[in-house]
Image (cartoon, rainbow, N blue to C red; front, side):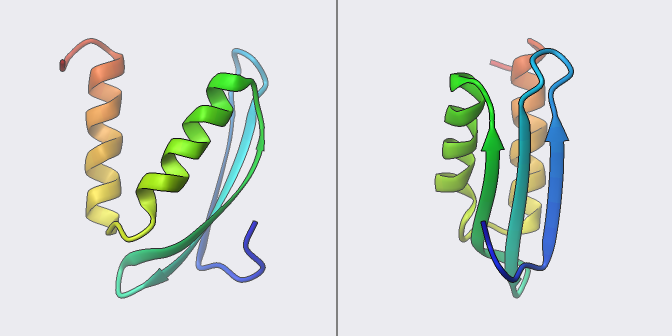
Length: 79
């Protein structure tokens, strides 16, 4: 968790009740720090860890592009 942050997002899975809260610190439109509060199953915890490792240093454009690619892959539209 970050004491000071520029943005925050929260999500809850309707399927299993997992909850994630993610805070980001930004500098020149790049994520410089990311903190999370995660109450989730093993899959949710693993997903949060992957995001934590990948997101720092990325721009907003890169994050949105990855979100779209992941959604397409999960829906079977992309391999």
